[in-house]
Length: 430
Image 1 (spheres, rainbow, N blue to C red):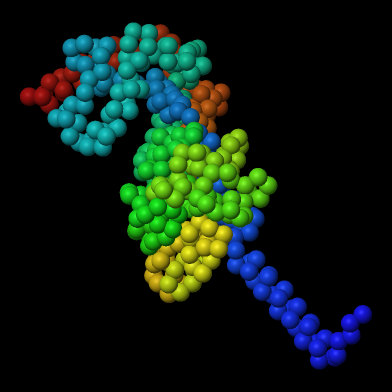
Image 2 (cartoon, rainbow, N blue to C red):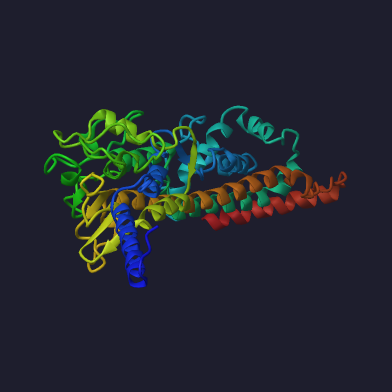
């Protein structure tokens, strides 16, 4: 047994600790298994929304005829003189265009005429009025009931039209997007192609223009305008695909069990189709997603929280001495040389992040419009139901009392009064 003096034992312990520290430091300085697993998760959270995997979480109300029904019912119980305003002068069963010179006292009518035309189009036809009343479950309405409900229906029709006009102003159609719009915008940010692809393979769409050279470093480093990785998938390739010839744990940086088998061939500017396909398959391939502004904003936050900003640059992914070479001792990352914490650039200056952020803005406008349109649709539907139930709530106006046969003197008296009135009218007309 070898005995060491106290100073020697102390020196030996220090030497062992230093050696362990150096080994640990060297291990941390290299790309390790799962070194970029968080970055992979954040990027795949966006890529899994590709193609037809994502639909809108908030859909506008389906098209219905509630407003048209109220306006048609209003026209059906209107007085004959009002309905006749819409008849063509010669072809009585046809609707006429707005007569500019006829209603100069009512300038607001011109804007409303088209809606009134639609409401009157079926009512003025032979049997059209009865058909419209039957449609609204008022087939057996009496003239007295009709007169009783007419003011209330006119009020409901005016309110419903006002709600519809306000909806168009505060939630215009151009603020709405559909599932196809959503998918195209997502595909543009993910693959650089609105059409998308089930198996993306075209690197020229994922990266911008000609590469500055072969290998990851030439395409994954640059400022926010010159960096070639302009799509989400390109960023994933920079983070997860190792440089050709590497033989350590770089291939397991994003998946520690089997790792990626394809590499970024040193003789080519961008990864080949096999490498691209392998990388995008790291995402969830099956789950369907309902996308809202908040869920998409959260996915952006998952990415930006992993961007490391230092003086003079920002990196996403594991970097070794500030590099993104694609090798174990050189870093697997995306680097932006003008996104340091000492500059004025923002995360949204990164092209693919900007595209996703712009989509969040569009989704917020869409969701606000959807909310307004649902509220309007519910209000108008309620008014339609109210209009159809008025016959049960409005008291009919009483008929005029039937007068008994009058005596001859009373009859002669009325005849004399009518004759006098005609004479006065003739005198008044000259």
